[in-house]
Image 1 (cartoon, one colour):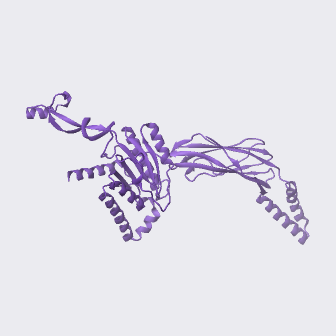
Image 2: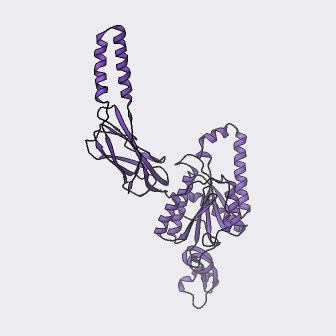
Image 3: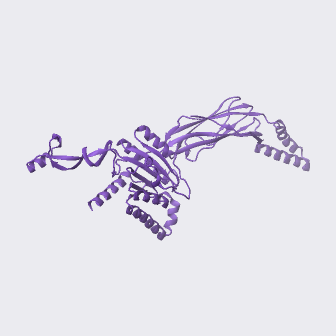
Length: 433
């Protein structure tokens, strides 16, 4: 990917060497006059000659600067190479490149501000190899150059404003299964529905009837009851999944912030759901709602990853009502997988509103105590405050469950399958009761 940048006006100024020569030469002349010692004049003479020879700076004409990268899209932790090329006209000595690197871009093998000595009229080239630490959109906004003339007494500074954009996709967490949806679509899939039909999930037994296949006969039961009985199976259908991510705020320092863990979990859920043939959509909710319509296939998975890379906290005093979203954005038959750090009550209220209209919701509350060390240390100094904080979090989870939301805690270091297993065990106990 290439990016041409808009140039700012060059600024020429004296280097610190000029001040040093003036101060040293002036002091030597003053001492020679006051003390009447000729050797001080001999010391000041070469300094003054150097100042006179370099009094008129060589003209340096800045050329265009170009940024290039070997990749436009990459995953977090993947290496990328950034090339900077610049043309210079006129006499110059060494040239310093000062690129403005994005905060989440980590250089690997090059200094941030290299000093180069190109030949006259030679194209200036510098390569930086780095690695993005988190899913985001990297903007390389500007490059500044500082060129010294051959005498070292003057320098020219200018910058190139523009943008080289790289999209960093989140790393998907391993997810072996999904929560069981309460409603499915009519299309064929891999989820057992409540209706009987072709499938592998056992439903019940019934007497053998004309038209049943031989492979449906349950021989142990038939021999025991002395009459043919057939197995009934749950029909396998496609599910509609909507990933709901909380972007009201993020807790901790990136790349280990709550938003980073949520994006990786959402990517894992999307990969597993699409492998099962489900239809997957994305809804980013943080005061305003940004959505990606549901779809299937590998191409749609790439679109989901790109949408997750652009997710960012939105600080606002308002919150949109998710229950008012149109059906094509959030279907009433969809299973909503909500991912949240439980840091903003507006997200809780929006989820409860969805549950009240009958939406099937499985909420994963990310534990954030280990993501903010400074905050935890302050809480440790007051155990009562820490206990109250945990009690408030548990009460908010209970309020969500009372509203019909399947809610479970999830720690950043633990696998998502453990949280899903706990969710399904809770569902089984509720059905048994």
